[in-house]
Length: 301
Image (cartoon, rainbow, N blue to C red; front, side, top):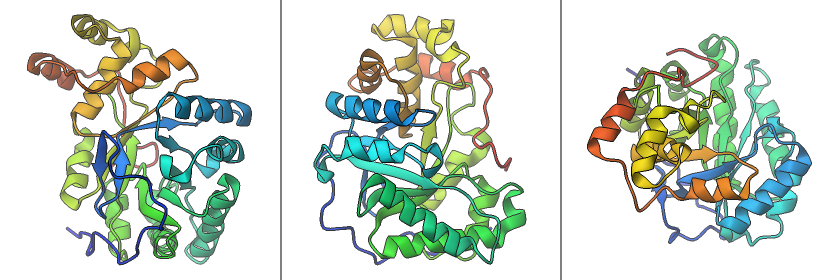
């Protein structure tokens, strides 16, 4: 099995960095502290993205999750501009590329576009959003794209770099040419998939790659919000079904990206600490097989 040859690089973080005394963080493989809970901006119009980020920051969120593909980053940047740069952690992403001959140049342009749209000189975490269609059929392009992120990192324009929706095959592909191990792999992860779907979380653990969860409440079925399993457990702890679902994720040591435009829901989504489910309840949540889910929409293994 091919593994990454290097977990960190010699690049230093920008001078202005978020404080290391934030509560509830996970340490990435280069020593950067990443807040466990982030506020997502997927599917939001520019106006909604701006108002939601502004609301989230006012309620205590210190990690915002964005992406070039979301087409709302200028508005995200407007909300962020009202806050000191050291007060929040910003994750964003670049889309995949399939041409080995142009992947480095095209990705470099996308990386620059992220910074320009957000109005920032650096981000805290930059991710490749997903592997290309065909996954490792375009391995050379994936390697060139990762080389662009490494260059961006060494230029101190990102405090950490990683991937999203990558399966083991995708990680093995870029490992063959990488000098820096991805710090994060952001994947779909929720109750019903089991604590280690397709063995991807444990695979990342062995390489020092932090697994981060998106879609922690599933894909809109409501089962992980109002279903009998999570609401029954929640009633015993005076918590909602959604809080139980999110607590299950962070209880496994997995950072989570949440979404809501509601102040009450956003506040509840931060209330995941200082309580925990029982061992028996955790066992029941671990064993759940519904709703179904897969870590990536672009690769299988």
